[in-house]
Image (cartoon, rainbow, N blue to C red; front, side, top):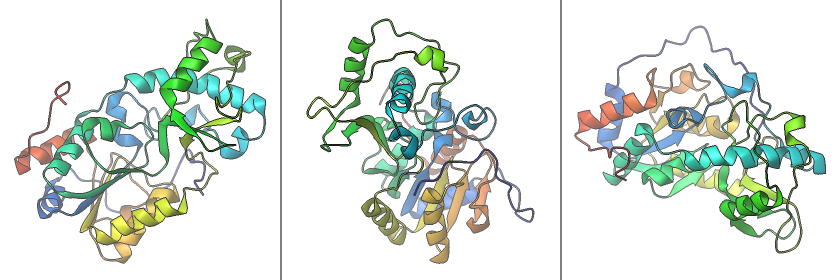
Amino acid sequence: MRMRPTLSWTPAKDLPPGTTDLQPVADALRTGGVLVLSGAGISTESGIPDYRGEGGSLSRHTPMTYQDFTSGAQARRRYWARSHLGWRTFGRARPNAGHRAVAAFGRQGLLSGVITQNVDGLHQTAGSEDVVELHGSLDRVVCLSCGTFSPRRELARRLREANAGFQPVAAGINPDGDADLTDEQVGDFHVVPCAICGGILKPDVVFFGEAVPPQRIEYCRKLVRDAASVLVLGSSLTVMSGLRFVRQAAQAEKPVLIVNRDPTRGDQHALTRVALPLGTALTTVADRLGIPVEVAGTG
């Protein structure tokens, strides 16, 4: 089950501080077989905030849970009003240097796979292939009654038509695509049903309190087994959905390397934690390896 994230996490006092030495990361990539595990921190340079750290959205925002979403029509009205507005920001977000560097590593055959905890699709937009979306993707919608999947852009069109004039100004956007709106701003926002059966529509993402599909977890475990090392990018590893794979790698004595500005829950299992911005760190590594990274607008 994906647990609701907490605002704070206290790292162990005996862990070494983060470093700026990127050589272990470069060495791992040069060897190949690297499994990337990415979190919200890799997308902050694309304008999508993370939950924690400076400016993290948890200080003002409580993520929707599956239990809340299925509890009644008012909770779904509040969710879809906020998500409909937030989707516009997600739709405009573009991959940053970190995403493009990961894609470049993949094209050079240095990666064994990419697992992302993000729901923004930016790895794929940057050119990464066969990305495992651990928590799903906001660009798909599923009906809880008939199981039909449909594109988010189609739902966005239907919601625009059903809510002409809905143009509130959000206080902020969150990593789950949810905009910060008051109940007064939500008002009587009209939620549309499944076009096939009239059932309840839900984004194809794993809400907090909802289980990640077991077959997806097992596939990720296989990726860890097959990898030479695991490279964590921009994740605090606070929730078990990502931490479990770091622990698995450590138990198998596979090197774990972390690039994250702040301490993480997985630091005790890591060979190193590099405390640098993701875009800067990964493009620097690419330069050391002689790997070209496409600039924005060329991919």
